[in-house]
Amino acid sequence: MTSDGSPPVDIDFLLGEWEGEGEGLWGGFSFKDRLSFAHRGKAWIEYHQLTRTLEGATAHAESGYLSLGEDGTVSMTIAAPTGITEVLTGSLTTEGIVLGSTEIGQAPTALNVTATARHLILRDETLLVELDIAMNDEALTGHTRSILKRA
Image (cartoon, rainbow, N blue to C red; front, top):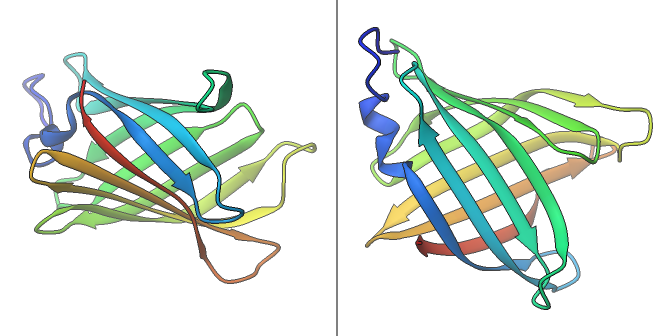
């Protein structure tokens, strides 16, 4: 973490607005994705995501925070209006960030998500975002993949 109000330097490559298209790996659906990463002078980065159908209707949203520990560990917390919360930890790689869930919270009406993993990979000014989900204690399976450019 930073104490001087500057963004965590190793993860500041995410800062800004990203948009593009994605695909659902379960069922083969397509969507538009927009991610926002903002720094407001604290030791974390805000995260907001909005997914729309190709026709423009809202399909999914989530918000959270990323932080970088003194030991280089990356942490992310996420809440979705579907009643799922995620606490993820991971690390920086040469290409980006790899995270796995340590805790999943569920509202009574939420699907039984039992684990998640996220990859935020930067390649040639393109942000590849992959989400894996496990439900009902089954193995993690690829759920969505988005290819985003700076907006």
